Amino acid sequence: MVPDQIEAGTFMLAAVATRGDLLIKNCITKHLDSITAKIIEVGGTVEDYGDSLRVYCKQRPHKANIKTLPYPGFPQIYNLKWVLFYH
Image 1 (cartoon, helix red, strand yellow):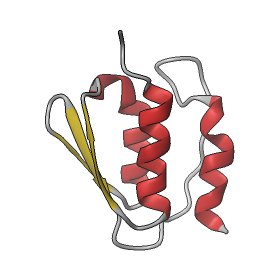
Image 2 (cartoon, helix red, strand yellow):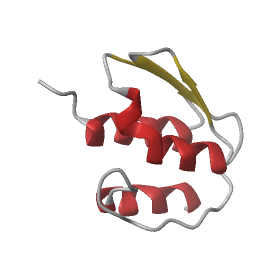
Image 3 (tube, rainbow, N blue to C red):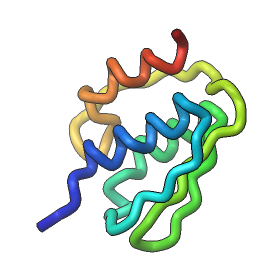
């Protein structure tokens, strides 16, 4: 069974929103490229360990424009979660 990229991406966004530090194990990191790119753009850090990712952010996220697209683009389901960065 393929790991759920939406669930993993939600945890990644939660780590950035809370300025936390999170290790996500047993994921297909290639499936998370679009969310990884945006997290890095807003000031977060994503370390790729092959089948796991470490995500953390030590400052308030910067603003970024997003455009939702079908896979492998940025999933529309992240729109609402993305707004939480700025409130």
